[in-house]
Amino acid sequence: MKFHCTGAHQSFLSLLAQKLEPEESFETRTADATDLGDCDAIIFGAHESDTTDYSGSMQELKVVLAACDDTPVIVFLPGLDRTALRSALSMGAYDHFTSTTPLAEISFSLRRAASFHEINGHARSRDAKLAETPWFGSDFTTDPRMLAMLNVVRKVAPTDAPVLITGESGVGKEVVAKVLHNASPRASQPFVAVACSSLPETLIEAELFGHEKGAFTGATGARPGRFEAVGKGTLLLDEIGELSPSLQVKLLRVLQERTFERIGSNQSRPVHARLLYATNRDLRASIREGTFRQDFFYRISTVELHIPPLRERRSDILVLASTFLRNAAERMGVPVPKFTPGVMSLLQEYDWPGNIRQLQNVIERAVLLSEDNNIRVSNLPPEMTYASGCAEKGSSLELEVRRFKKRMIERALMENAHNKVHAARALGIARSSLHRLIEELQIVTRDNIESFPETKGPSFFAKSA
Image: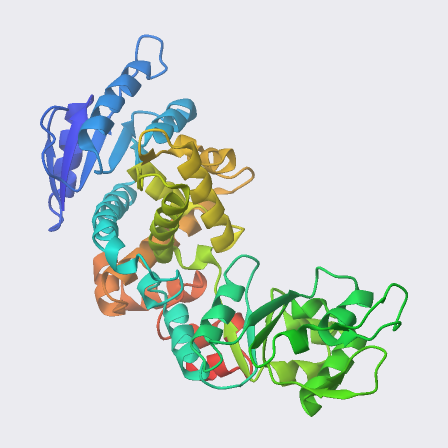
């Protein structure tokens, strides 16, 4: 990996280069803004102006950012100045460090910047390949749990087995359901999704089963429900955890007998559809609380697929973001813009409480606001740019250190194909220490998937992973 140092404080940056160069993979040289050349990242040294606000350095930084194009720029600030830091990041800087930042953290930041540089290049080269691909598939993930789940999806898609899809709001449960439908023999039949939380209990039964004329006040005519409308297709009951126990009993009888009656009718009608279920609730906890029937749970969870939240599979964020970027630009009829390195860093570091749905909305917003065919930090929502400039309010030093350790270990595992011996060697720690940290920090690896709470229990996914 090759890095160039430019800007002020050349003596400090030269000393930094000497410290880094003993590491076999680093090649660090000083250069001016007109001779940056080909490199993996640029370290820009900022200096305080007469007004002690780094305004002079920020102007120089603009020149460097314009000259380096896609190359990540890491800003060196002699002391931490949050105003200057937010300004640098909003202009497109990738990361920062100060004179008191540990060398190990600087090294980690440089490796991460080089990785981003490589990923950015790969993302453009694979655009044509993924142009017609939905954002769910092995091309969009390297996470061991997601790959295990994809393997289960391929096995159960051709069957009629009931599938329960779990995960936080916005992780893509309905997308997985559509993939299951499209890969099944029912693909030419309708796919219908019903949000069980969007209707009051008094209307859910009529929505699912339909009703006859005069069955209740306002029923001026007969109406088929979703079970009839979907025919031999696929019916997704979303947010199944919101159903009342009484409706769970009725639905359980339908699933067992494969027949139902419209409200106000005694005529039994057959169920031909394949049923899929989704929820963001912990149904096992709901069973313990008495709000969800255990017999109903076992009926709908023959196969259980859990989708991890986006914050637990950060290596997938940039590929998904690139796909959403291209799709949004095509819909809006504009040229596909590109992410600045600072945006790439922020996207991967953000915790994404709204998961993939939030990521997609953020990218669409950024495309709308971009003006020069570049997605910049200023195009992202304010809450994201605030988070990039300072630690979370109320966060402790211990929490920040824990996050840093976790990022370093996850990166080392990914760079070494999850070989723990090689990852421990790259981190400079004993393998036993690495195992302890993986357990302590709850880091997902290819051989500890089953130890995580969301995959415990008698689910198909846990047994197949």
